[in-house]
Length: 84
Image 1 (spheres, rainbow, N blue to C red):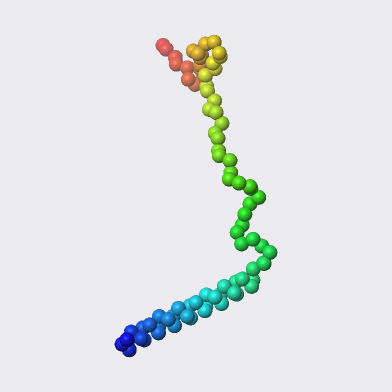
Image 2: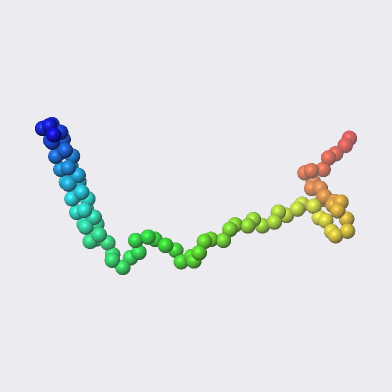
């Protein structure tokens, strides 16, 4: 190997050694401050997957019975048409 390549390899290896040591130290520091009895993942008390949402049936504005299917619609005062 050439001297330049050796220097670059040493710089890269030293970078990973210093960074890895710092990260492991930070990991130990953070883990010492955590409560050992707490769950690492916050969970709820729900068991299984949630039930699927089912929308309530749409209410019809027409009143129908079992005999006639032609429903009469009650007109409100705002919907009335006036002829002159």
